[in-house]
Image 1 (cartoon, one colour):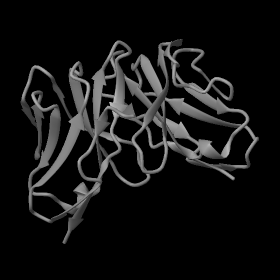
Image 2 (image 1 turned 180 degrees about the vertical axis):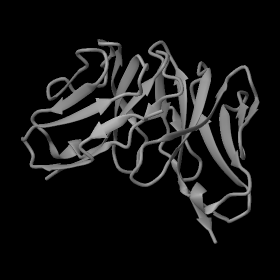
Image 3 (image 1 turned 90 degrees about the vertical axis):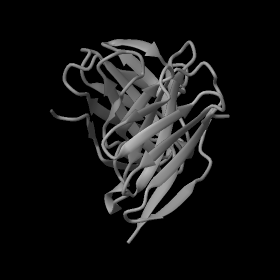
Length: 112
Length: 114
């Protein structure tokens, strides 16, 4: 099976609230992680990445947290907007092949 | 900066027919990837090119899938013959480096095999 998974397949939040999307990974050798956003009919769009020597990284309205102890990754979106509605994928880069392995995604729906 | 270009946008074929997809990566990106994304799943790597050479094709069903990147720029992915289970979105991505980091994706080709 896939080594990267998500806790919840769907997430609904009110516009203006903060969103937290979680991701678990199983390969302790993973040293690079990426979050992608995929809107309907489009390809995945890079949001933010983090290396395993970091615990936190911030971007514009987004923050990624990495907890290597429990092999958990999260994406926080501040002041969620309707345009944030999409499927969010986490992906890890590990192994000798250095392939990017994607999880199955979380559908984020922003309610008015 | 132009993004990754893919065509066609949609394709409908019958099983056992052949189909080809085209991809033009971001200018200057040496690494090109083809991914398959089945509905409701994350993308799965099919093949990776570094310039015009294949770096990884371990997950490419070579009995029916083929890909080439002859001049180290654009690439084609072919399926022959297609099966029902090949129905998916085929995504092309490119990156400046070769370490599967910060990939930029095209919009994909949605293939329906009937």
